[in-house]
Length: 159
Image (cartoon, rainbow, N blue to C red; front, side, top):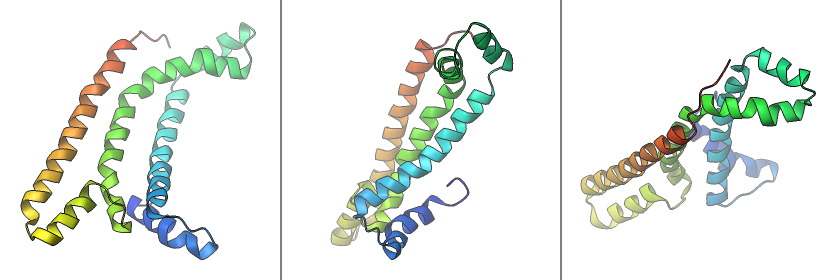
């Protein structure tokens, strides 16, 4: 998923899956493509964070008698969360911006709504500027929100 453009993924889900008998309406197809794409990036971020935890943390947990699941849940995951936390909101901000791509499969979202108004008014510039401003405000709010978890979960990590 990470090696192909999101727009191609959207086309494959919406136009390609019916050739193998899976037909989806535009909105579920868009949600599936977007969630598949962002989950590929998020899982890679989390994998990297887990690998960033020192091997000694695993060994210490095992020496205390913790199982693999307990070690992952109580020792590794909290430390990995601190590593991955700064990149998570950036992924969600990217997802918000990527929602504009589902307009190509007739999902009525912000850009698609603007295109419908443009077709009636023939005034593209003000509407596209308005859409850009709305996306900017949404992303700016998400950026401001990202500082809250960082501030409240900022604990020193011993590697």
